View 1 (cartoon, one colour):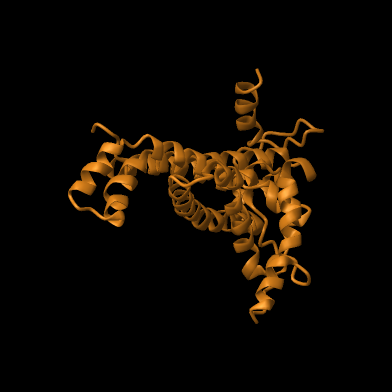
View 2: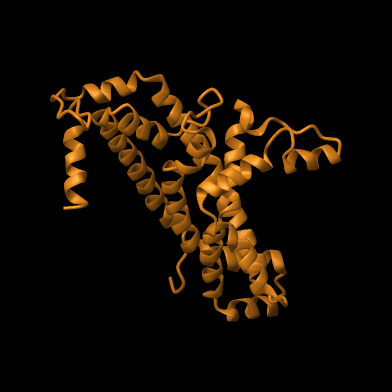
Length: 271
């Protein structure tokens, strides 16, 4: 009732002019045709893909690197792990407000630090060039949950492999690339799939920072933001339903590609 019915209803609504207040009329593929002639629709797709292409690989690289650092046997490591996980507990709205202060071009901490070294900081959130990189930076600050999953994966790698490698004279780099990373690929695969899905559903941070406007110059108008505006601001629920199913197809296609290629690079213990 609460999942299947709305799911299949949205398929029907995507072929109608349904507007919440009015039942609408059946118009066939007209919503989909209009979307392909909607400039903001393509702009939102570009912004979302830009974010996903840079954020997902960077989150994996930084996540694995942090997990390996936090896996060292150092005194007080539990405190360090807690510190890196804390940003994950901050609500996205609060995180957006915090970073808006940090990235303020006039009195923000980041530009103030750059000025100390004689570097003129950009207008982070007010520049078309820097707005999306700023959002990527904010999102990377909250990858603590992925780091915990990587830590669990590192703890699952048997010590015998490292001991045998040390006996054979392998150095730290060789052990990392021939033992750690290959045996961590199942966890990387999981975070790659979940990270891709999450990146294409980016909504809270850009919506909060721009008050739903996607400024500057719509450079922060993401796909789900535009979908939300059509459905709940403009009451074009049929149009929004069509957007939702296009997003579903895109995510399913990308997930299928990742699963098909996983056989080449994901290595499971015992295989």
